[in-house]
Length: 481
Image (cartoon, rainbow, N blue to C red; front, side, top):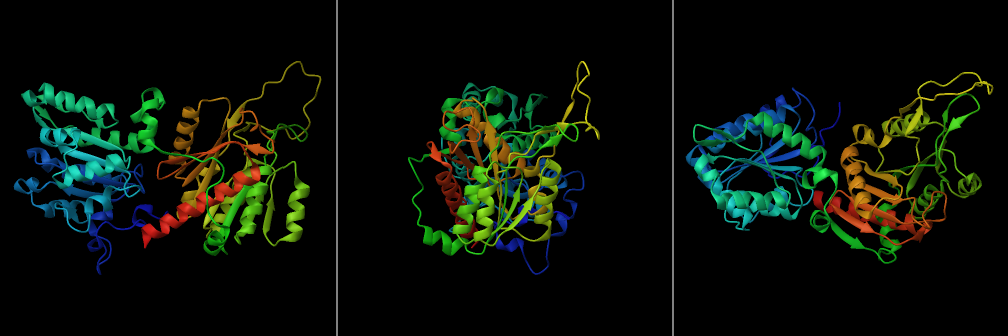
């Protein structure tokens, strides 16, 4: 059974975990699908008579795997008792803010995956658009916007109010800064709140592909880059002491993949790439220096002698592979055999392989040869299904793309794989070609930070990658304490 990652994050309210175990209402989770499995969805309810429909939305989200938390404005209790929302979600309901800072705990960086306001009144839209935080709902929205958590709003009001130019302008402004609106149903002189099914579908789309809903045509506009991400331009190296890192990292288990793979056309001919394995080599050296317990899954490299020298000097496990399937089997086998604190997938695994591989050498006297390629399995996308708690670092290589595209595609990879960090580089950049001794990387993490590094030798690149892993692991430990 796959572990529900949503329950591994710190509970918003300790009352959710009592002596009676899991709330019976949560028995419906994943009964219709797992599209939102592992996602924490905050549903905010404002004082519209349509608030009774929120119960159906909560249950639908849960049936597709979401862990749902409910925030209501105080005025909602004029229409519905808060106990209905507790029953529906199985989690405590937030209606007032206190010294516990409920709005921060539920909508701060990385605490939730999606905020949905259903239904949303014109009053709340106006307050949100103008930065007014005087209810539990508007305070949650304010925090979520700053933490860059995706937000969906489903308006509900009379049609005449919906056509009000001021309200229209508020909606247009919020859309401009990335808020997603699900249009109401216009009938009977009402702007009735959208169906729960349409809001659910929009939610799935948004959590799967956050960036494309902020940017048109799947490209982040320049004026949204600094809004969506926190950028750090690193001039040389992240200032962290080795002893501090060694104390924290010592004896933690790390799995590193490195090198390239080959895919056979026939017993002699193969498809491969020109990866040297140098990046993985320096990651291995740095991990050993920090006292980590290392397992290395190694494909083909151009520096096998250097790896052999390290193996002679230090005690670590090494698994040699050739094909993408062998790489997949070895990585998954290791993850299934024991817990790993960190998994770094630095190998340049073939993205495609021949649909059919000939068991004998293909004759050279044929006039032509058509080779049909099919995708290989994405190893990075399978890691968290085997070990949900491992700190996963993926790698993304592009060729001659803009910084903006590199960043967008890196973050998309992070979302698709549920990775904690993605290291990206443009191998078309001078000094960062495949096989070179230097590299220029960008690192994106789940907190929507991105770190832009100058061209460095790969030893320095490896040091900075391990430093950021340390920073993120330390933050996770503090968040969980």
